[in-house]
Image 1 (cartoon, rainbow, N blue to C red):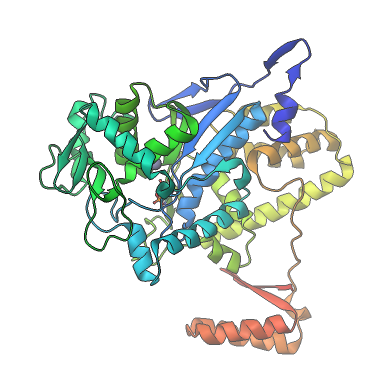
Image 2: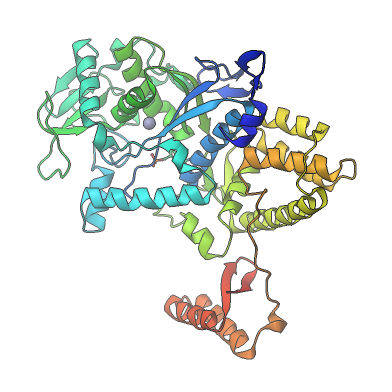
Length: 486
Ligand code: AMP
Ligand code: ZN
């Protein structure tokens, strides 16, 4: 629980029940906005589908984690304790998400001439660095690796087989969706389950296109394989989430999150496995974030429009700019990324940090409650309405109707909910105007722009180093280079 939660969720002296504020979320399962009520008062069990660590997470993936972090912040500030798990997929996720094709980890290992273990370790580390940069406290989250839970996955698949929910084919053990009456209930795809299944490449012998693999027999050359009752092999992708959530959080979860792409197949399959095995509801609140697109297009390596957090940092944007950019849109709204839009978010966040620093001085960091604070809290607790919450923050900070202490109270709440480092804004180096630069640096900058236009990146990098040696840092912005002192 963060400080804000401890403050506002504190126990009354004569009443041991924590005071918890009402929070509303849109549940994909019911397709309605609902009052959030966890199974145990005061405690939230939350699972988020994590990255497949065969490559860097792109900024679309990162939207999914800022989204689940915002849910956590809102719940903690309302007085809940949140236990969180994000899985690390280091085996079983095939290219194309279906039951055929190569394992993504094997693809990554071949690409970088290394082992699956090294690939997974490399990209897990980068993933954790990225999300920390985005203001996510990784110490408060458990990150289980699928390869560390093979026995639990085998046990779950065995239970499903014993209960009659699975059948064997020569290449593995499959879940029999026809045996699970509620199959496809998430996202209203029940009637379209054929279509959902049809998107998965059909395997010979499958009873139904929507049936999916629980355990896959090892193919010659498979680098990752384990013993099982069905011979040597590796787990299907969906089973890891059912097995790891059960091991770490129990059979019934309060919240399960992911990107909307997972609704139709992955999450319906998780529900089928867990509910068939456990005989009880798997998840009470399913929450999904809409996709981030790149200037309106799907992010894809083949189109070459994939952006990573490292690209953003290289252009000298503070990483929290991306978080601010995400929060400007509601999580259920598709969001289109462009460098111009990111630059606009950067200038807004930098102005906000400046404004906040002024209020810190004027208020001497003393807080008072206010109507603005109440309005902010009600808004952010209403299905995480972050764009409106940011609007309230801006309007109230600029208004003369609130005292500096009231403004500081709002800033502290906004910081706890939004994770934008408002209490301790990073020091942003002032841009050095071109006229103030030494001639040699101005000259090198000009040559560097020419080299970049000519796509001579080696020369551009050499000139960047030269400029750095002279004591200046260049950030590439859509409107031109931005120069600060090192
Ligand atoms: P993956 O590594 O592909 O399993 O994806 C990790 C998480 O990112 C999942 O929750 C996905 O649903 C989510 N995700 C993938 N692409 C995007 C995107 N473009 N926008 C938002 N979320 C995404
Ligand atoms: Zn999952």
